[in-house]
Length: 322
Image (cartoon, rainbow, N blue to C red):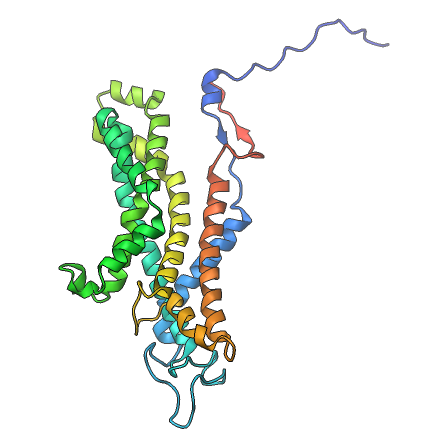
């Protein structure tokens, strides 16, 4: 016996409310392969830089060749990558150069993040004339090419040891580069923070917090600034790659790290004279620069793919309000 259809159709599923659509968030997905590869490369570089003093028996400024050897010495059991034109172990100088590049890259970006978060947070939270003044300053900094500004500051201070505060540090050249790169790199960070604060400043959660008597400091530290962590992390990671590259070309031009401190850019400059007979002196530090920049760029792009819900192909999970 067949049951005749009654013509009654099942009720359609209720459409998500405006609140549910507003609170839509991306489903948790595994870390992208680019971010994982970048994290592995960055971790490997950091590990080599930390253990640079223990991985080779030589110092970075030690003449490691025998008296009867004419440098540069080719690779051997004693010198895995050979020596440079002065007889210094090339592997040792590459490892110590990684330490300096990472310190300059991360130190300069840390200063840029501190200044950018302070300026962008002030502009996005206060608004009004404060926002106008801060953002005009940001536009003024961004109007000048970053390489030109860095070159001008680096050329204006030929000897960092004469500076009152930086000159007392163990490596004043490294400290000066961190200050210069951080001083010109805060503007993009400020724009990111301001834009993020403007997008969440009128959120219902903040209005509810204001209604229960939360102060401005609590709103800024507990609700607004945490919303900036994802874009801030992406921008800072890519900024480290830019700082590593900036340190390399500054040292190549003779305005960055000065001898005898090892720098990948300075090593490329020193190996340029031996490019025909001993190309490894120029190619190996160049490959190290490319590897470091690639590692941080992969990590930054992967984190952007992980955190940005506006990218295509990201499934959304909605919280349906009762």
